[in-house]
Amino acid sequence: MEHISNNYKNVNDDDLKNYLLYFSCVYFFADVLIEENADITLEDVLYSRYYWFVMYAKRYKDIFKNDLGFDAQESSLISDIDNYFKNEVDRTLIKNIKEGNLVLS
Image 1 (cartoon, rainbow, N blue to C red):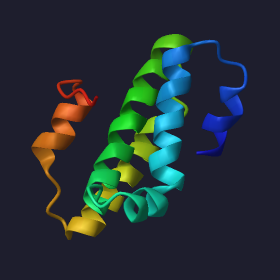
Image 2 (cartoon, rainbow, N blue to C red):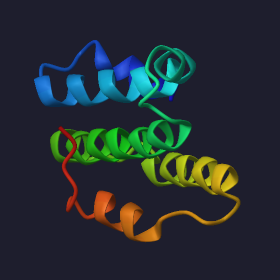
Image 3 (cartoon, rainbow, N blue to C red):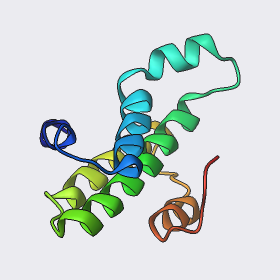
Image 4 (cartoon, helix red, strand yellow):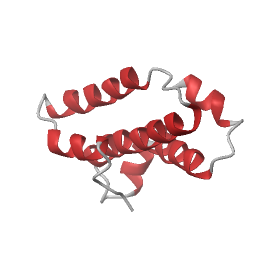
């Protein structure tokens, strides 16, 4: 994830910056989010990480025409979900996120 944050400083796209911010919050502050809000579960955090990463990756590719190896990072996030759910990932949800058929508010 280091190369993502390195490119952040030089970007003038608000959507891209927001997607990175949201991803960073659920990636780096998961424990705080869960502790401070009884309505947020680890499941919510894991799927949110994936959602915001996919949003970021798509926008980054649109702007820079480069994927920086996002597929490997995406696989790692899915693996985290797999490990948590003991290989019972909601594949329909993952597919809907990947295809842009799900919008979080």
